[in-house]
Image (cartoon, rainbow, N blue to C red; front, side, top):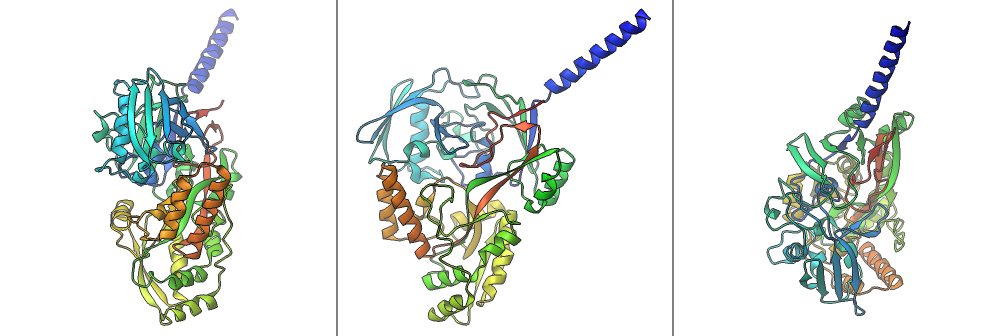
Length: 494
């Protein structure tokens, strides 16, 4: 009997140890993402898919944006701003190292910011750094940034993925072998399949709770739902099959979280293309498109109507969504006024995202009712960036602009919308020089009104953040104030 009791006790102890080990071993995660990034250097590309993997995980900036949209210290532990608002003095954290073991200090800040704003810069958000007059290392842990003029959003701008800090020795290789200072290190990129990162045990801050994370590229909605159900993927921070959300909400294995994004989803318009130069044509399209039917039909009810390039959750938001109500008679009258009562043909380039593909079909059907016949051209993300975003060889396209507070892009002559308006530029110039929050909000509302009045683009809806993940996971962001899947605080619960 004693022998049996001992064996029973031993078996129970072994079982407990095995169970404990199994629980302790759950320190990895597989994150599903829709698009494979063109590369992994956020300072050299506009694709949101880059930042969604590397921001706050591999790379860090002087400041960082948290999930509430607030500016927090990152590689700069503190800063002071001169009374005239033109000199920022940053105190850097000590003992920070890049993933290859090299030290991070003030010289890296000088290099990173000068590189981002330099003549040869390929930074997609180079304009963010234009207000900088000089960057000076006062000592190894102190950097002075002088501005040409006060810039109210400078600390926020320095928290973008485009403003991350890089090491001169490894910067040129960051597209394929990213080396940052973040809580995770790059491990492996299996093209067409996944990107793996691992915990940086030499991290300057609190270590990540996860040991390994894999970003799995899941190209379509059918594969996404299948991978969730099979538990091959643990989480989709942005689930691409909104029609499946009710089913997933009823499954106790999953948590469905509906949040907000900075993603203004627009019918981007080449304002210098034939016919689209005429504001009457752009307004006709705005009246001809049933935007609510796009939200209902393409997004299965997930999305918020917008009337300009501005996020509804921002305190400066002005609701202009009803200005261009769905009205085919108005649309046809505007086309006649423009001398185009017989319509015309145009191209609609669609990137591979589900929202673009689905919305494009509805928009093509709507515009056909006012005799605008669209040729739908589906392109992959690399082609879209090359032909549409950089080459400006397009008429119309559909894309979500997920950069935070990016209304200023309309003031850039070289931006792909080809919108060049002196009055709008003056508004943005005044906004950039204003620090008072009340005045800034007034100027941002005027900017929204101007874009709406000029019908620069077709403002469709604000993209919802439809997250789905294993119910035992905590720490993933509910909202997306920046393009990020920040895994810093993610962990598995018992």
